[in-house]
Image (cartoon, rainbow, N blue to C red; front, side, top):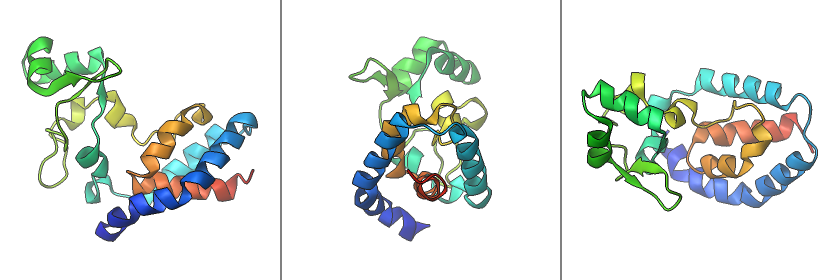
Length: 164
């Protein structure tokens, strides 16, 4: 896994132009079965991928926190939402709540999430490769390919399964 993580950014960079062109075509001519295929590829990849071996998403990026996330996590810590915000979050340039720093404050040394049961929606759904209307998140997917080995593998399989 370490070797894969060391190479993921290079692999993503090497395939970025190809992937960008592919996703541009996908938006123009979306196959009817795209969501079904993506669900299938996502499930197949995550049967063999253990996120605890990697946790690169938690180490290199931070999720967006919705107000529902903030309220749920603050309740978990027996805090008021504003206390949680003041302690852990800041507002980014898009006016979204994000972590003050990465790696994620809630990631332990064994790559476990200390708030897993109440984690943010963005964390629960990452890398978003099984999302409905997948073609609408191509920019996000291009970013996630450089972070997540599973997302990279899914996109590579997608290009084989749905040639455009």
